[in-house]
Length: 110
Image (cartoon, rainbow, N blue to C red; front, side, top):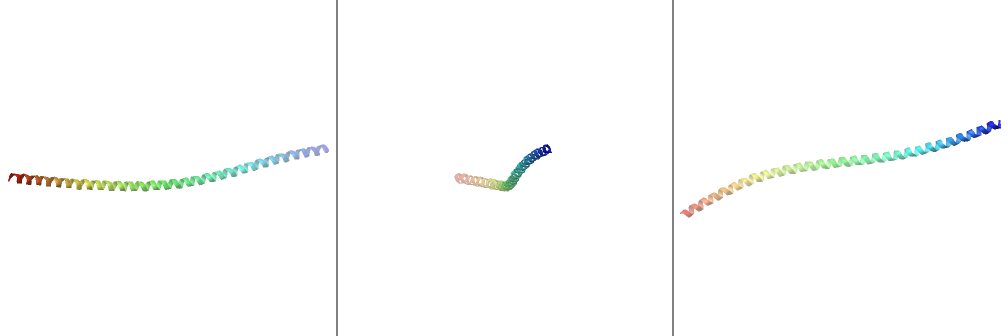
């Protein structure tokens, strides 16, 4: 009987040690899981911030592209206008020059 009691006490002690070890292991896993969950949430927050930043940058780029296209259109319009007006003015000046030369030739011959 004493032998059985001693054996049961030994088994109880062994089981208690195993239970404590499993509890420590479970606590360590719970801490690790909480740590990983915190890291995951931080990463999610960073990703959300980066997505917002990317969307802002895309919006800014689109806005700048619209402004660039508008400026290029205006530039093309002004270039065409000045080329047309400049050409007309050059032709007008050439005609005036020819008239003046004709008058000068006429004045010299009389």
